[in-house]
Image 1 (tube, rainbow, N blue to C red):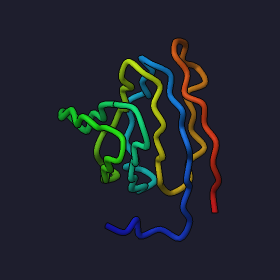
Image 2: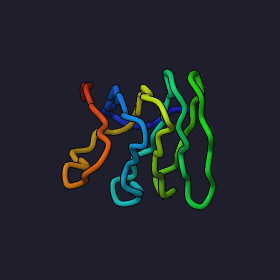
Image 3: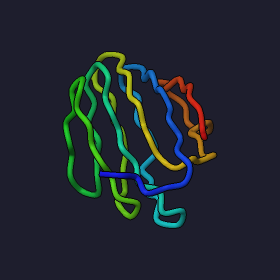
Length: 104
């Protein structure tokens, strides 16, 4: 399914065991997202549904859906593809998720 955006952000996230993102949606900025799990295992909570993912799995998430990534017991690598965002989880403590990527 196309993202239907003029710009795209691609990030490589290496997430420590037990890491989780903050629950959020993209209703205001209308960002659709695709998450590609490269390796490891994680659960993506979309609204009230837990979607288990293993390496090679892909999920498309609509802007209005509340999403949260919950990493498994081992490090994982995740590639979120979306319209660019400047948000971060820098105020959180606990396991980390190292990001690298580009916007264009």
